Image (cartoon, rainbow, N blue to C red; front, side, top):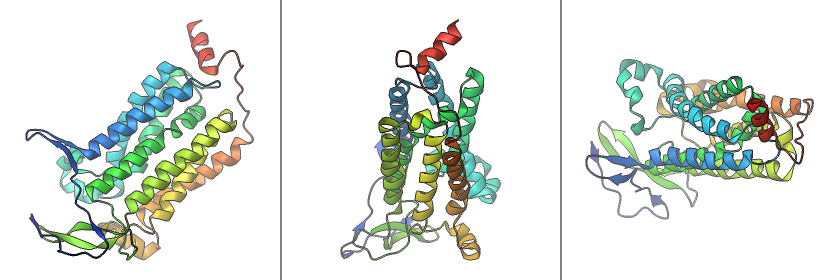
Length: 301
């Protein structure tokens, strides 16, 4: 592949020059993309441990330990298979060995979400836990992964935004011909928009609801807020994001990108969970015995 040199002057716009490889030992490369997934899972797990210590928790510490293992499998397998099926099914059908090449990128959040939901269903059924309430607690931890994942997309110089002349636009290196890469036009850093909305803003909303209100005692409410918040954030940012080249036909024919179509069910499910949470029996934990302790005591009896 030939890389053309960056122009000597690019006005006020920064030319993306970040290296996707965090550590290169020659025989081994550690990429920021991998570290992002690791950071999201580890920090999300530590935060989940903090949440389950609070009165009213639907699960105990050991359930949280199992959850992070199942969720990791769901994120990796579901995220990759989701990307293959939603975005490039024919390409991977012709080159099936590329499906396992996770280091080259290509993960779908919606696929990872489906994998995580299946993981929560398995955990809940196996241990007799409330699926909705487990979902509420896990939902509060997901923004960590979204934040680091979008930062990794930015470092990789992928999933960039549409051309623009705003002062904070970024020029990414783009494929301009067979085997030829050059500096492209200024674009919206849509990866950072998503990191801010899906990661920081959504986390803060869920943080306030969990710690400063009684939302965690209303089954499905926090999960609904997450689904609605993510869906709306992704739907809006897609207007600033460059559609995948092989899916421009979808935008031209429907007016919406694949990312927007995939968020529509999330928005509807989020609205449903929020609305119906008012009718569900609220959960109240005795001040002297959190629900997580009660679960352990019941199972030990």
